[in-house]
Length: 278
Image (tube, rainbow, N blue to C red; front, side, top):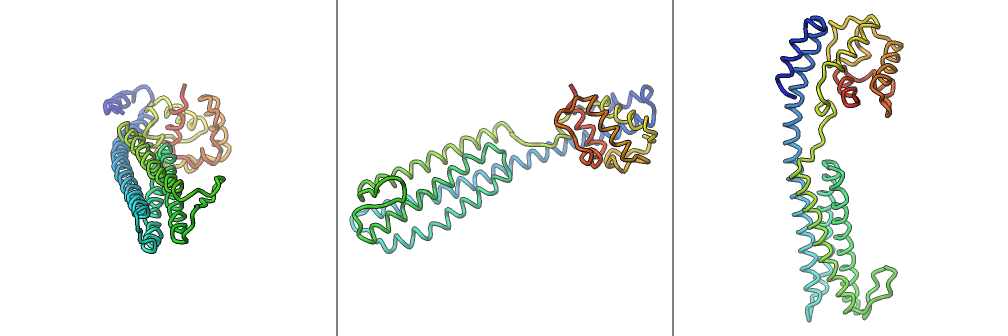
């Protein structure tokens, strides 16, 4: 919001009345502060996502590198199968770290980072489980490996090729995740509040104040951070009528429930109306 907006609002005192204009000016000043805070919050969230994305990629790379190392040693001429069996069990800690880092991304978002995250996690688990199965087959001296899929048990040489392919699949999914993460950070895809996003307008607030005044409410005592249900002498009938008029005036199709409207603050209600203004 342009700071000049406050001056414009202040100049409307003669048109809308001193008491009502005071409420509008207070609201506009508060919105400027909210937008500034939203910008700061957006920068904080961007930095937090960047760190979380980097942590996830680092954890994924560590798990992949360790699995590749174990696989390469398992194909040596005289591998220490017992040692490899211990190491493949220990690598579960690394894949668990990847899942833990991925859980943060689901919370921090946005939604389009979730699928690339899940693909990395799932492919690492598949890689680890198949490698575990391959090492058990080596340890047991089996000539074929059953990966528990619809495929018939594979000869050891073919099973080695199957597992080797998985390391490239993991790498491809890590690259895909990195590409999506980079796009999100470059486009500043930050989710901010509707209150910060809605275009400021004294028209929407004036409409609400007029509607309240028609119900006999003294608008000069209104505090914009106050829930509507706590305004002056307002009662449930007043709120129901206000909600109905708001839906008609703003053609609100998704519909606010009575409780949602009543529990909203004045500024939240105005932001909601502004967002639906046509």
